[in-house]
Image (cartoon, rainbow, N blue to C red; front, side):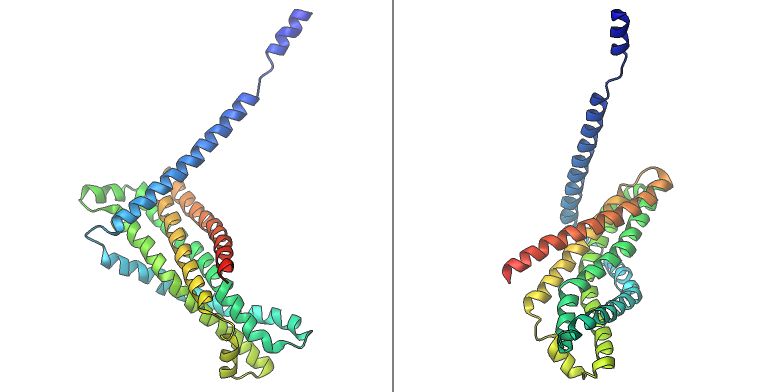
Length: 274
């Protein structure tokens, strides 16, 4: 009986080693991806300052990223300003401080809402488009064909897209802030009959150069992050059409996650300078 028990005990599978192996494999894959992204970014800066630069494609991508995003950005910015004003009025009314609404709205929109909302919309619209477009070109071997024909696909496809969204996102953020302030003014004018000069004077009285420069810096970081995530996932897509969908999905999720991380870090740094 003792022998049979020993035999049965020896046949029990040990699960600790496979679990450790899987964790080790996931950790290796994680750090390998970080290293590949690092190399990808280094290659971007190397190709950015190399000649010839694809100016025509850069202008085309700026048009796609900036002008094509205006309708969605306009609607979202206007709704953001209007809704935030409606939500803030009851709280200020309890203290008889509705005259502070323009200042409150301008601080909220310029410091936080405009950069964050614009970046999230760009991540969903532009980031997914970059991942899907480059992914489809990768799995259909169009990128390989460009290399054979003597064209630098990284310079033409990746550098122009990352540069375009990095340059255009600050412009879109400023536009979103203005549209959001317009929505806020219309709501305040409807309820308090505040004139436009009085609204502008009150709104920008509490806004400093640091607030505007911090928002522009946020937009530059967000744009670069969205461009890198979308282009990296699409440029190295695999597994056919399934990989295209995966690249677009991962590009959006990763971009949004990194945007919130960068938002938290930049806010801490800016507050240290106030």
